[in-house]
Amino acid sequence: MELDNQANPAHKIHHVVTCCSWLKFTFLAMLFCVLVSPAAAYDPLDPTGNITIKWDVMSWTPDGYVAAVTMNNFQMYRQIANPGWTLGWSWAKKEVIWTMVGAQTTEQGDCSKFKGNTPHCCKKTPTVVDLLPGVPYNQQFSNCCKGGVMASWGQDPSASVSAFQVSVGQGGTSNKTVKLPKNFTLLGPGPGYTCGPAKVVPSTVFLTPDRRRKTQALMTWNVTCTYSQFLASKNPSCCVSFSSFYNDTVVPCPSCACGCRNKKDCIKGDSKLLKKAGINTPRKDNAPLLQCTHHMCPIRVHWHVKQNYKDYWRVKMAITNFNYRLNYTEWTLVAQHPNLNNITQVFSFDYKPLVAYQSINDTASVLLIVFSIF
Ligand SMILES: *[C@@H]1O[C@H](CO)[C@@H](O)[C@H](O)[C@H]1NC(C)=O
Ligand SMILES: *[C@@H]1O[C@H](CO)[C@@H](O)[C@H](O)[C@H]1NC(C)=O
Ligand SMILES: *[C@@H]1O[C@H](CO)[C@@H](O)[C@H](O)[C@H]1NC(C)=O
Ligand SMILES: *[C@@H]1O[C@H](CO)[C@@H](O)[C@H](O)[C@H]1NC(C)=O
Ligand SMILES: *[C@@H]1O[C@H](CO)[C@@H](O)[C@H](O)[C@H]1NC(C)=O
Ligand SMILES: *[C@@H]1O[C@H](CO)[C@@H](O)[C@H](O)[C@H]1NC(C)=O
Ligand SMILES: *[C@@H]1O[C@H](CO)[C@@H](O)[C@H](O)[C@H]1NC(C)=O
Image 1 (tube, rainbow, N blue to C red):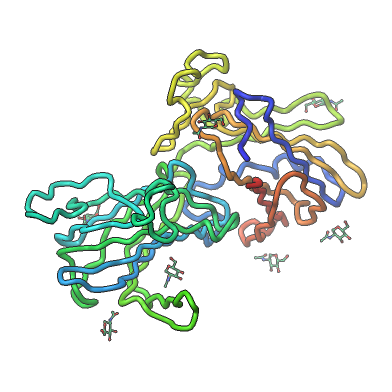
Image 2 (cartoon, rainbow, N blue to C red; image 1 turned 90 degrees about the vertical axis):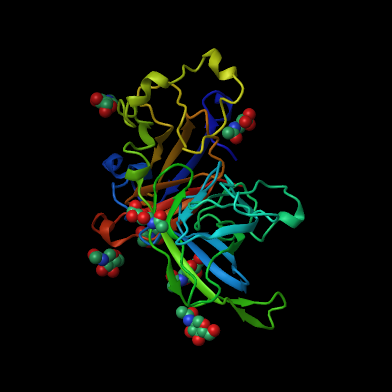
């Protein structure tokens, strides 16, 4: 399911949240777009969220090794959307990549020193991207070839993995001589992630497909990358507007809620530019192409109080997309409100509570995560 594109208002997406206890009208301040979260790598709504990149050395070769590289998205609500991840690192020595299965480097680099058999990549700092779906079977690797898209852990753990195989040459050929790659970078898509150093961890144990035998990687190292909204963008990427059955006034998103620096590049809803080919193509740097609005946010969440009885209240939320470059498939929305610990019904969508964390405990608020149907 896709978010409502402003260009196509017939497909506005609504869902209704019903909650048990009577709603006090002080909640507006309590509801916020998750992307307005603090400017630190630490996310109080998902304190343990990270992306882990694991290298399992499966065999030593005459001049290096073959490793299975697995990326796990352990973030509860942040997925890696189209156009997917881009992973980079620096080789510690003169390593080259002989072959890669299930992914590819974006550039081969200068392999002129090699006669006959040429490596897949000779760059000191290779940049790796996932293959697109539908590649021939012999170029696939388990959990590969999804165009770099990864679901969030809270959404679908089985789809939150991405993996490829790399054969490294001119590297160490034993666990004593191998040098771990350095300076990992991850775009997911666009900036926001910071990766720590690779650390040797206990070797991964694998079960054979018939589950009757265990095998073990010859050596394993992990890299952990964490997300910071501040690194991704100094501005939030959504805003909240508000209305209710008891008052005709709609409280709109604040002006320039997501910053107005891009205002000169925004597109009017009726512009002829929208017919231009490629205008809807997402970019690797994740830069949006916004419809002109007073708030200049890619996403607006509207919170409308429909009913408010002694026993329960009911809210309709409408989410509107103003970014022509993204369809936001498989999106998630996180809402925080003191009463959401006793949701009785959510229509049209899946939801899941996020645990209430220490830092926000004092407000007694509980979080809700809302998923699209897919
Ligand atoms: C290494 O990463 C894997 C996932 O990629 C994770 O399951 C494992 O716990 C990590 N090991 C350590 C020691 O962090
Ligand atoms: C990694 O990054 C640091 C700091 O940017 C730099 O000093 C170092 O040379 C880099 N290492 C490699 C192997 O590129
Ligand atoms: C390296 O391999 C040897 C055996 O091949 C093993 O005893 C040793 O613990 C390994 N060291 C590391 C750091 O994995
Ligand atoms: C409706 O809301 C507006 C804005 O919050 C407020 O100024 C106005 O007094 C409200 N009207 C009624 C009838 O409550
Ligand atoms: C978004 O959806 C529209 C209509 O379904 C499609 O034409 C467009 O190519 C899609 N854009 C992206 C970036 O997927
Ligand atoms: C949740 O609501 C039900 C009634 O719908 C009520 O019986 C229960 O006590 C409430 N629980 C909390 C924790 O408020
Ligand atoms: C947070 O709330 C829980 C349950 O209400 C409580 O057990 C815990 O002690 C609280 N933690 C802090 C740091 O206040």
